[in-house]
Image 1 (cartoon, one colour):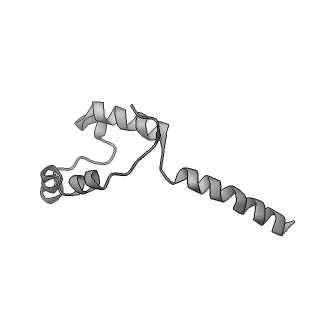
Image 2 (tube, helix red, strand yellow; image 1 turned 180 degrees about the vertical axis):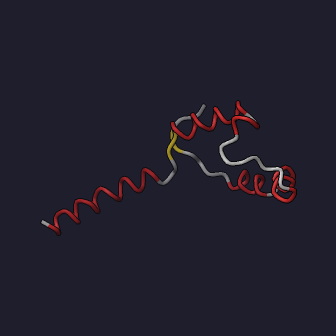
Image 3 (cartoon, helix red, strand yellow; image 1 turned 120 degrees about the vertical axis):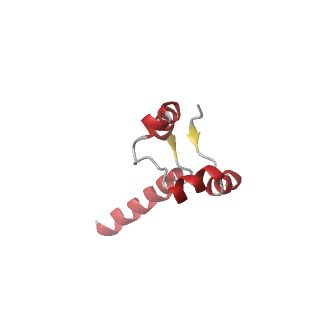
Length: 79
């Protein structure tokens, strides 16, 4: 299990959008309802739940760093 910032991969993004499995699911309608990952693949669902709660997106740090000076400037302008 990795902790920390995610590193986006263009190669994986393209592979996921063009996979045969995805085309079959979307074109033939073999999709499970949202939130049913526990039924279709419980091991992957558990991993994804832990991963999403322990990592942050790659822009969260930038937003936090740029947001704090902006809040200080706005606070000084208001008062």
